Length: 560
Image 1 (cartoon, rainbow, N blue to C red):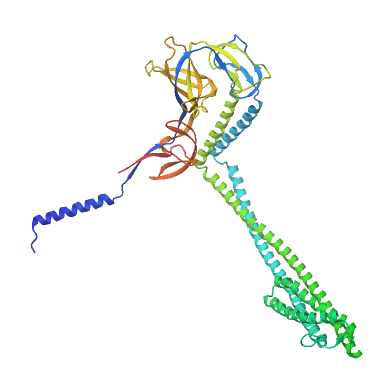
Image 2: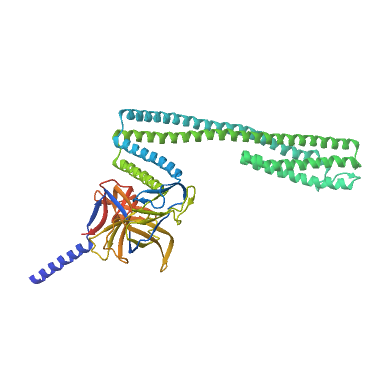
């Protein structure tokens, strides 16, 4: 068959195209990761709102918390500057917390210094001694555990031996009970009755005659039942079986004994019997009663002895078991102590890992944040002049209790205008009196800026189109003759700031339920790491725990 050159060429082209398509659709794309390093910097939390300028009339200063006035530093007509303390509330509770928190900060810093410095020769010696001591305690604990195991085995063996002895005794006496019951019913009083359980002689008491016949039939049945129960107990061969059968054994013997008493009673009313026969019957009944009574007492004593032995055995075994459990727990505790001591020794030998130091540095930041919170709380116990101005009224008195919403001091600003704005309930919790504010005005270029500060937050809500707001007042730091009433102001309220803290990019932060995670690039591969974050803004979040400075956080990826 001849194949043309053109056919061959087209065939090769088709194969090449098909191979290219297979490669294109089956190849695994490479992933390129975009990362941003964890570095130190400033995280500023801001709230952005708009407002409008209005003429200044009077500023009413209200306390941020409820408290008792203990000092008033101004009177009506006083000229004050920004930051002047005008009145103070009782703050002893906050001050005590501040003292305690300062100690916590100092402790965290000391620990950070200790971790950063590494171990001294003396500390290494102490750690080695602790590890040696822990090893010695583990060896002693293991030996004590072995002794406790042997003691437990001995206690069980002794208990089994003693119980077996008492069990053998009661089983022998159970056998005796069967023999005695059958002998009493069949041999001793059997001749007094026919095969159908009737007396072989006459009586003058039909009641006793019937009772004796009925009890004879019952006692024969109980003697057979007794034999079956004892055979079952012997087959089981256990203490529980022997003790469990006691009620039945004692009950069957009681029936036999009651029958013998019926026989003794009916013999007092016989007719037609010779004195010799009657005397023989009486002797057999007495012998049976004596034997059965003795056997009942014997079996009851055996039951008591077996019960006592079983209880004592249980006490002994439980005690040995408790000792063995305690010894096992001591071994586990000693192993944990040795592992901890060895880890401490290794840590002191090799020095602290960077992530350990970073974690402790984060702990310092956490404690500092708590201290800042208490200091902020303390500042709320003072009524401070938010701007330069003149005090116009002081309606409070020393000893009075004041609350948010009530005017404590009134003052007049030196400027002509203030800004009123509505802050939503979502953001109002971040804003506080005294917060600095960046201001731009629509009437002027955005490159021209002003500064101011929050001087008042209305405690009562305003509802606008179903949304809750709180009216907030801001004043300018400096006067400007160009300002006009009604001008629109764009406000950026700085609500919090963290300096020189580790920052993680917001693009790399993921929230899973109540937990935050980031993907970190390690050895070219993404690794999920749990983190704890604090303050956040539009670009970064303050990193409290989880990462170290220099870690690369994945903020994006592309496929090649």
